[in-house]
Image (cartoon, rainbow, N blue to C red; front, side, top):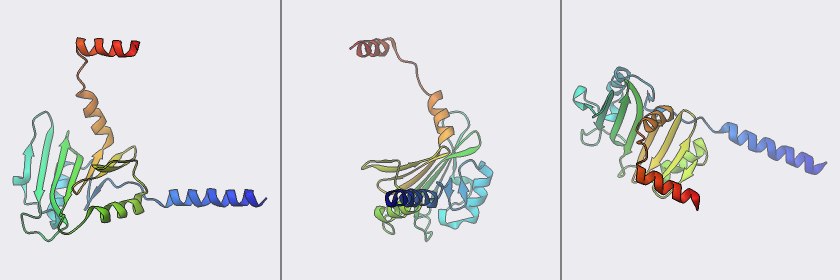
Length: 180
């Protein structure tokens, strides 16, 4: 009887801990993955933390339907924990957001600890990056000090579209390895 009660209490404690963790964010500073270019520009203008100065921060990338906004809070003298930030769009929607953090004002361990406390342990961990994943977003903390938000569905779609078929030599190699 005592074992059953203890097991039930342990189960509910674990369930509570899992439910207490927040869902992964879709962005930072009022800017979220999936927003249009105009929505992001408007939010950047309202939030001085990013150091955005209008259309001169917007570039077209090679390829179809790709736009990049690059801000530099540190170079523009903005009092912020942010350094350079990148907002990449595909088909008019934000799908990658990279926030480089000012290493003179913040450290990797503090951010890692805060993210673990808020979202639980990372899905994957390496010396280069810690990564949290959900169906909608991949959030990573990367060294030296950047947080990256990626729209998982758009990224997978672009990745699948860019796959080049194997050459004859590569297919022969794969067949050989499969036959071992």
